[in-house]
Image (cartoon, rainbow, N blue to C red):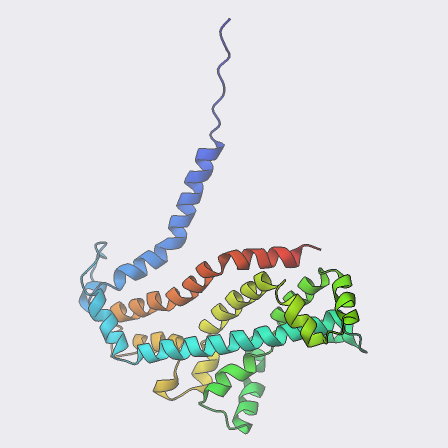
Length: 277
């Protein structure tokens, strides 16, 4: 008796083809930026546009680094690392307080912290600028770091994570005579590395992409950050030289990408931990 022919399932190949097309469309601007980074100024304005890479990538990168681009990269790395460390420490302490301490108005304060997530940066730019000016921090790294130490996102992440940890651990630590900071360092931190990794990725990328506030508060060329460097490359001369600009944009994406790749496992696991209840 002849066997009935099995109907071929086309859903998997179609899904793969669709995903490949979507990935290509999303990567197309980055690929074109990489292509422009290899062109001279004349080649970038050629019509119809060239689709073959040029040979000026190294010279365009050299043009960038002759304009203090290397210093701006180091400045941005320094600022991002300082803010990530400070935010993580303060967020750990905030999470500890919101979960393990009892004090009047705790839930109101937590709600107020979450409310700050709804406030765009542009709303607080003017009062923040006045405060920084009164403190004499204009055109200093203090202005680019200290205002960002507090983090509603970090406080929420650690509060959610600590809420999932059995309360018996805190009771046992209290019976053993451990102080709150000792309990935090010896018990909570070792159980929170994934959340710390997720926090580090979010805040590093956030600080790396800061543009509006550095433009307002920083004037010294040797203290500018990488986003200002890309902007300055865009404004050199009467006509934009897209080769150095796109080379700078490509270079600016590398450190956040490296951080995400290195902490990808912690990033995904950290959000899974805070989501489970």
